Amino acid sequence: MNNISAAAIPAEKDSSRTRAIFSSKAQSILLGGAVWIAAGITLLSLLSIIIYILYKGIPHLSLELFAPEYTTENMSLFPALVNTVTMTLVSLLIAVPLGVFSAIYLVEYAKRGNKLVTLVGITTETLSGIPSIVYGLFGYLLFVSQLKWGYSMLAGALTLSIMILPLIMRTTEEALRSVPDSYREGSFGLGAGKLRTVFTVVLPSAVPGILAGVILAIGRIAGETAALIFTAGTVAQIPDTLMGSGRTLAIHLYALWNEGLAAEQSYATAVILLIIVVLINMLSSFIAKKISK
Image (cartoon, rainbow, N blue to C red; front, side, top):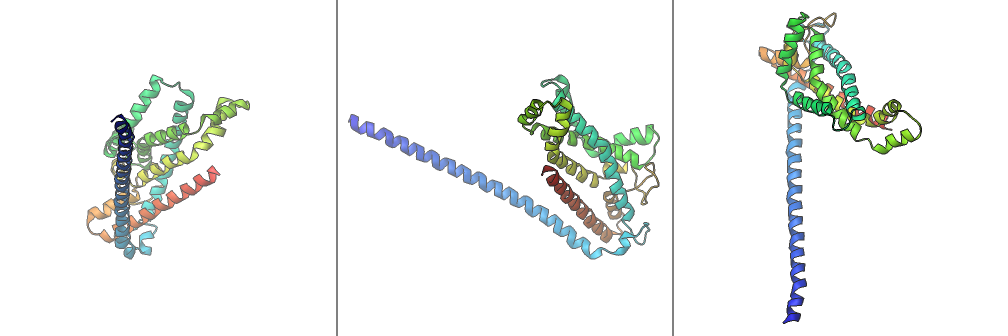
C-alpha cells in the first residue's frame, strides 16, 4: 500500500503540472488573441478614416485651392497653410527649449524625492488632461483681453506653447531616464563635468525620445481648433506680423464645413492636412535615425 501511494504522488504532481501548463497556454492564447483583435480594430479604424478622407477629398483638389489669396470663389487654403507652418514653428520655438531644459533639471539636477519634483510631476499630469477649450479661454482672457493683443498669431502660439509644454516635458523626462547610468559614469570617469556630460552624452542619446514628443506636439498643434478660435481668430489671410489674426488649416476646415457651402473644399483641406502630418512624421523619424547613428 505504501508503495502504491508513493507511486501515486509523482503521478499527481505530473498531472497538476500538465494542467498548469495547459492553463498558462490557454491564457497566453486568449491574451494573444485579444491583442491581435485590438490591433486589428485599431488598424481598420485608422485605414477607414484615411481612405474615406482620400476618397472624398482627392477629386476636389485643384490649383484654385492654392491661390495666394482667399476669396469666396476659390476657397484657397494657401493662407491657412502658411499660417499653420508659422504657428507650429513659433509654438515649438517657445515650448521645446522650456520643456527640454525643465526636464533636464528635474532628471539630472534635482534631488530624487524632492517635493518640487513631485509637485511639478503632478502639475504636468493635471495640465495634460485639461481640455483645449480651457486653454483657449485662458489665452483669450490673458493675451487677447488683459494684454490687449487682440486676436493674433502670437497669442495663439503662446497658448499652444502652454498646451504642449506638459507633453514635451513628460516625454523628455522619460527619454532622459531611459539613458543608462553607465553613460554618465563613463563620462565622469573621463573627467567630464556635469554640464558637459548632460549636453554631450545624455541629451544626444535621448534625442529620439524627445523627437517623439515633438512629433506628438506638432500633431496636436496642426489639428487644434478650439484654443485658436479664441486667440488667433479666423481671418482667412496671411498676417503681416505675428500680431495679426489668421486661421490655420484646422480652423479653415472647420469654417468651410460650418458654412455648409463648401463641403467639397473642406474634404480637400482635410487631405492636405493629412499629408502634412504624415510628411512631418516621416521627416522627424528620418532626423531621429540620423541623429541616433
